[in-house]
Image (cartoon, rainbow, N blue to C red; front, side, top):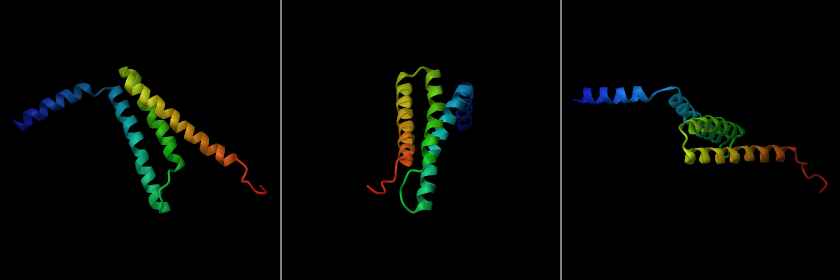
Length: 107
């Protein structure tokens, strides 16, 4: 009984695993890995902060997942991923702008 259920499940899973499903899983995996990066960074620094790598991983995972969302033509998923990408890129812009800003000496 269990073997038959497993075989039926495997057949359905195998039929749905195609290149686009792999791309979707890859995007989700990359996106999820940013939390591991942030956690390890916080443990190393002994305080909670978001490392620069977090934003780059967010963009990479977001872009891959956006391609998948476009492929499956899910407008909710597309809008969610596209708006997230805007936020990640904006955060990087703010970080780099702050690094280029004068330090305020003599003010």
